[in-house]
Length: 374
Image (cartoon, rainbow, N blue to C red; front, side):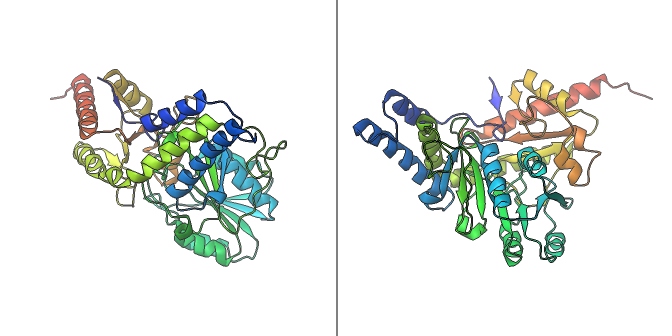
């Protein structure tokens, strides 16, 4: 039996999303057409928009559908730069789509340090914002590798006082913890369908009241003129269905923390180190380093045992490399050994127990192979 604990890479598609997509695929109609079939497609689109908005406490009008989290991040950064920001500040543990896009904007990019738990240094940010230059600040809500939840609202207060723009990558946090756009005070928030049990290739950018988004694609004026091209109605319908079910299932997601903590305790007792252990974290994410065992070898060994996890982020075209996030937390010594275990909507306590047993068996075999000295 296979055990899937790599939800932070992508979640299995929920049955509700599959049904919504199937219905949309079986129906004809372009959402820009005015006849009955077109109006039905438009209704599906706008119903999904409302469901995605509800997941993060936003208004439907604030939602722009895009191809995924990377495009949502790009649209946010491009819009901020077009608004007149003069420099960019990104936290040291941001996703590669933020890092690469920021470096392509032609502005000075500063890296905002984090502490040993992976939490962004608010005092550092406050000191960097007093110069009077209007900055774009990027701070992800929850880290994709460690699950560490950042103090976004506190950062937002500093950014607003300096008349800056705060972009929040909410891709990993959505559907795992409650999100309220108004409480975050973010100017933009990015989401991705496949992290919550929707289809791959669909995402959204949520715009706050201060944000003015720029046009990304020219043409027929879809998505309020921001992203032209006929909308991916089946994908968006699946996104909406997944968002609706994820919102209702937030209490069940919170209960997974006890399963995570059980495995964590076993691993610590065996000599492993947990990254972000005392910081607020997503309830279903565990980042652990087992010194002496390279990440890629651990992933392969677990896969052979029927347990699927990741070594750090899984968004680098299949590459396995030392974790940049762990290094930024001041532990470059652990970066080559970090392992990410992440559950989700269909995970069970038995899945986490199976992972614990597989890791224990791997450790036992490793020790048995080591030479013994008298």
